Amino acid sequence: MRIDEGGRGLMGRVGFGVAVGCAVVSCAIAVILVGRRARRRRQWGRAVAVLREFEEGCSTSIGRLRQVVDAMAVEMHAGLASDGGSKLKMLLTFVDSLPDGQEMGIYYSLDLGATNFRVLQVELGGRNSMILRHKVESHPIPQYLMTGKIEDLFDFIAITLQNIIDKNGVAEHNPDLRRELGFTFSFPVRQISSSSGILIRWTKGISIENAIGKDVTQCLEEAMSRRGLNMRVAVLVNDTVGSLALGHYHDEDTVAAVVIGTGTNACYVELTEAIIKSQGLLTNSGGMVVNMEWGSFWSSHLPRTPYDIALDDESPNRNEQGFEKMISGMYLGEIVRRVLYRMAQESDIFGDAAHFMSAPFSLRTPLMASMHEDDSPDLKEVAKILRENLGMQDVPLRARRMVVRVCDIVARRAARLVAAGIVGILKKIGRDGSDGVATGRTKGEFRRSVIVVEGGLYASYELFREYLKEAVAEILGEEVARNVVLRTFEDGSGIGAALLAASHSSNR
Ligand code: ADP
Ligand code: MG
Image 1: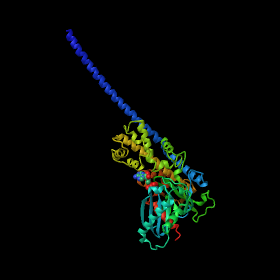
Image 2: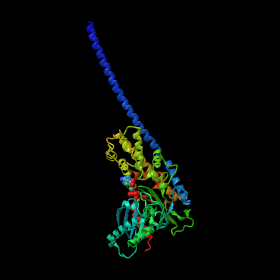
Image 3: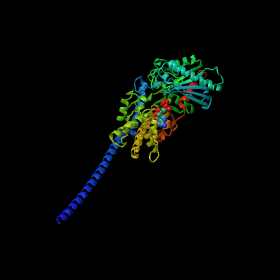
């Protein structure tokens, strides 16, 4: 009995024990699961907090954009008033007339970039802005020439030019005629005239010491004459001025040009009397193209985040090119990477793949754009790019959505700041519709203003273009915005430089 009882008692105790044990285990499992879920929620919450904070920091409310518009116009005034008066250099180009569509003949342009140079041959019809044909050839610059002597680099370019001309020479009617070249040289130059300028310093990886302080046009012309090439540099410009020229050739309401590629810059047509720092400047047209060097624009109204500050601190040109660092192709992918890396450190939403995002500039802007523009429901393209380009396997959908959000915030801020910059230029020249005289109203109509926008980033990034256009309309209001036209041309700056060679030709 006792035994039985005891037996039953034992069994009962064991049974009870097992039951309790099971309950404890399942409780424990439940606790672990709940704990995990809670931790995951916490982790996710931290990633969301990083996102929210970043988004707030990037705010481009209409009020803030208007402040940036005003700051741009004010800085333009200051840069025109005195050298060093503003971060905006507002450089004189000495280009005082733009192509009008009557140019005729064959002209050339040479665009010296940081890795390639491009040669264009353009045949102009002589009326109604007719470009009969144009040919482009792009050549890589051998690495050893980028750090050698200027004579060697320009001899190499002259030989290549000669070969291209020989190859295409059949199109020319008078081979004895001295050919005219538009030289697009997008490095800091102190312009002496529309066709000559002194190199201040190199950027973008080129360092040819013996060129600094020299007239780059003279160096190129000497190389061409050493090679027996009968060619003259008719005009020396940067790429924005070339784009403006092509815009004006097709449409005389063109007033400004903006390039958004690896870097960013803008130029526009200014009245000479407004260029206070060059008293007594006289031109036939009463105007001159001003190269703003707007990449270095700065204002306390720009929405700057800790990520922008860190990027700047670690850059080789700290405290310089502040606007460019929020806008251009060289930087957008890098800003995204910095935010994602922070999220990965704060949370585990990317699993243990965080270290893949630690290398600066490992996320290039074209990849960022592809992820941003991935419209597949399960973000296949984002997964592929993270896997193939950053080595991050199996990033969950939720985290991929987060990646797209960050890309969107960065691109939207950049595009809206460019829009504010453009409206700033319109305000400076009285075409933003903001006050009585400056409304640009003639006979009850607003004056049309055309702005050429070019560059690899703008041309290839559709969402960026949409945000930009939307913001221009938002700032100006529908009525004024209807008369502000953004145009883009393929090879615009190259063809434009050849057109400027034509309109500045000594054969004209
Ligand atoms: P550069 O400014 O060097 O003269 P481009 O105007 O051709 O050259 O612009 C090239 C830049 O455009 C690249 O550095 C890159 O940042 C950006 N870019 C190129 N392709 C894309 C793309 N698909 N999406 C977004 N940005 C791009
Ligand atoms: Mg370019």
